[in-house]
Length: 301
Image (cartoon, rainbow, N blue to C red; front, side, top):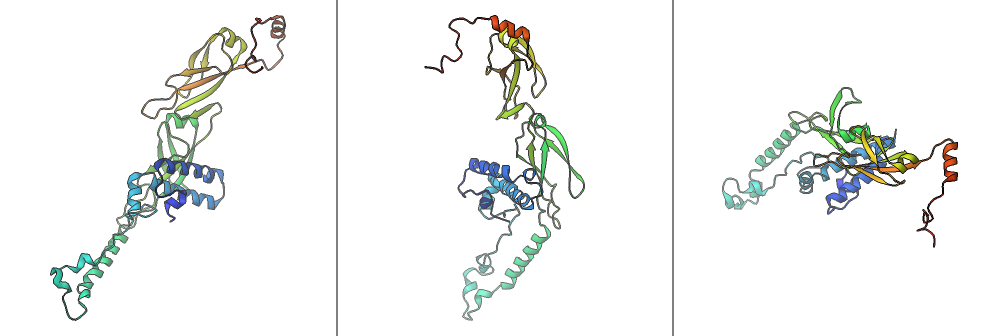
């Protein structure tokens, strides 16, 4: 398997933020949903997810850098060294032999230990991690949900979507991957989440943005309106004299990450009737604005 640093295209000194940015940038171009039928892109995305799994976890990254695990997260067998055995049974005297072959004393023990350990490693080989993708609705990402994934090889996985999950975030299901060899533990299932766009909600960090159309009467005279949020509709007061671009902040109606909740920002858009309205046209034809009223006065010399 490719070196995870090479897969993500980052230096070994890269910060956690650099690794996260590199993963998101590549995931947006390699995601299977954006490359249907492209086996190469699918394989690269699997490698990308595996690399991110290693480098985004500080403990795993440390163990990989020190050679304790390989790029797939599998334990590397510890290598025996001659110095571990040379002093067995006599300390320095084990070297003092005029035959010239004293360095091979105990070699049978060394090889027996090496091959015995290799055999035990083989019997306890950890299973491979398996990669999946799951597309979810915007509201399920904000509020959390329970999902079931149908697996290509048959069977299914039950998945808990945590509230506030982000696009391209990867969920790990421990022990739900490939089976291990012998007494080795099973691998994990890695599920990459794709959040489908919403017709009118847009997420920015922990805040949710919404453009709200209002009539000229509601904007001019003020109104009490029912406004949709991710957790259900609420009543909102539109202040008298509001304009297009006026923003109303709904506290605590954004995304919840368990450490406080974001807000919903409602931007008003004043909309004229789509069909001709003779009464409105007649009123506006007779309306004379105040002499100091000029909506473009700051734009012109």
